[in-house]
Amino acid sequence: MRKDYSHPIEVTMDVVCGKWKGVILCHLQQSEVLRFGEIKKLLPNVSQKTLTLQLRELEADGLIDRRVYPEVPPKVEYSLTDYGRELEATLNLMSDWGKSHVEKVELNS
Image (cartoon, rainbow, N blue to C red):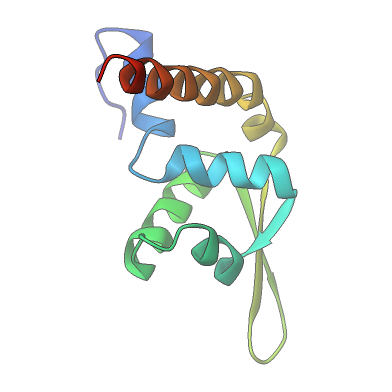
């Protein structure tokens, strides 16, 4: 279903800025490939249900690849797609801005 957006930034925010999406993408950018349990350990405050939903949405938007291995127990790995890698510079800028903002707020407190 196509949504109507009044500005292109809305599209970016909708696709990348779910509660955990940006952080998931940053971790995949740093680690190349992560299993579900590894992502969960990196995000201890996220519920399993929410993490599953965020990963499915990122996969549906073509930003990450989900690879299932036919093993018992099942082995599932996540990685950035080439399309997802296009966000690396943007994610790095957002991360840098976040660090700067925290420092600025702490200085003003």
